[in-house]
Length: 132
Image (cartoon, rainbow, N blue to C red; front, side):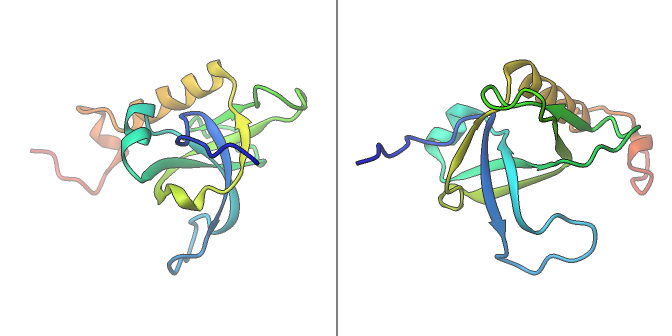
C-alpha cells in the first residue's frame, strides 16, 4: 500500500486539470504541470496551495519566465515556470507528484515572484494605477 503524502511541498511539480471555471483568453487552461510556490508552513496547515504553471515554450526577453530542471530525471529537459500566472487551488486537485525543481531554480522562481509583488515596486509596471 502506498504511503499517503503529508502535504505538497514548495518546489514540487504536479499535474493539474484546470476546468473548474470558465477560462478564456490568454490564461492557461486544460491539463498542465505546475510548481507549488506557497511556503511549506502554509501548505501544511491549509487545504490550498499557490502554484505557477509550467511550459516548454521559451519566450526570449520575458524575464519572468524562469528556466528550470527537475532534481531527478533527464538533465537535458528544460522547462519554464510561468511566474506571471500565479493561481491557488485546493490541494486535493494535485494528484501525482513528478518530483522537485532543483534548489537553485526554485530559488530563482521565488526571487522573480518576490520582485513582481514587491511593495514599493516601480509603478510603471501597472500603468492603469494612478500615482498618489
